[in-house]
Length: 500
Image (cartoon, rainbow, N blue to C red; front, top):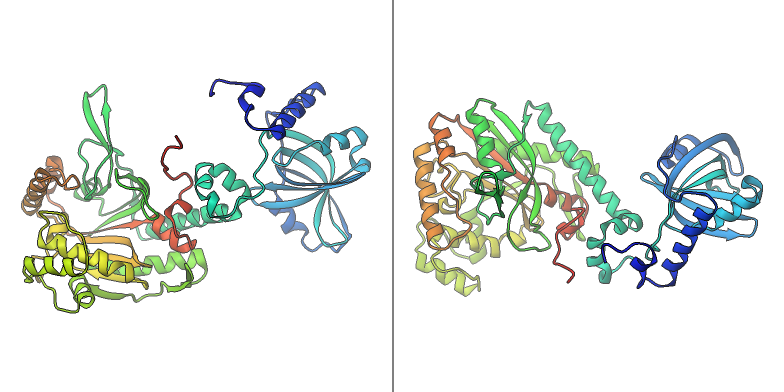
């Protein structure tokens, strides 16, 4: 099928495609190549709207515009017809007539199809009905569309098709472009905020000899020349910390991470994170910094800190509520839970509340699972959940008041994790012990446990200053700002199961 050309490649597409193929040959029969090399566009639809918005109804500007874009509507009316041309900035009405084009070019204009790419030149005027319009004097077919655009695209039945054929989604669904522009603006504002505060943007490897920096299952590939397995990174953390060891002090990366895990409305195997590391600060400093950063970024993108998400009010204005993980679990189960709570009692709590556990989980993991199932989905307003158990935080510094906990927080908003931060563990001896414990967990079957990274340990042995580090899920933040329920709405080309 992939090697077929001409009509045979469209044999199952029906009469509409057949007719367009015939038109394609008609254009060539007139000596016109229907797939142009280039076009000298001088204006965009927004240029024209901004410049001539003040024209009176029925007034002619005398200005000749040059536009290019996709034909999105065509309304034929005898000796005159109206059309809509759409470029990246929006749509503008066109008017073509026998008088403006001449008989033969006008007939050819009427043979255009919705979806064709065209270039037009003509004078700008405002119709008597107040519609800014270009009176077409010349036009060129730039690219012939062989498949008709879908007439009905919205609705639940088309969701998967929209994701698979995102190019069509971009054409016919304005919300997709809007979401994309919000995403672009959000990343720009995050970068601007960090750059203005002296952070240095760096790039770390996507292919890594050891997958580290997070508890996740990696994708594995094989490097032929080296004769060795490599892993798509699950996080840039250990490389960014090497930068701190090297004296850069403030570094960040807006990066693509890859995790060989399930696909859901809030998970995609390939996703975007912001991670930054900052020497001489702790997790309490990072909590204040995150409040300041997101308040400024959200205000720049949305124009407000209070908005609606999935039909419910959400206010990102700081200060945010702060609660320890153990306090939150205690509230949820109606009894005190602490590092001293016996494992037997934790298992009973999980059973009572139908929270599934895996064999071999230690108390810290059980408590964290209770939090994720019973508390996290119900935290709507931005909440900083502090002080995670040591067992689930192998790269975080032990808590200054209780070494069974760590100096770690997560930002939860609208029922999901948005950010994760630590006072970083900089003691190489403690870090080695944590890695070794992770290795024991892997031996017991935990595929997401950390692998011992001996080079990272060697880097720590040269000395790393006190450091705070934070990771922010860019996709999940954009979900909030675009009122998107699914992460697939904010990733242009999300991963899907095979069609076959």
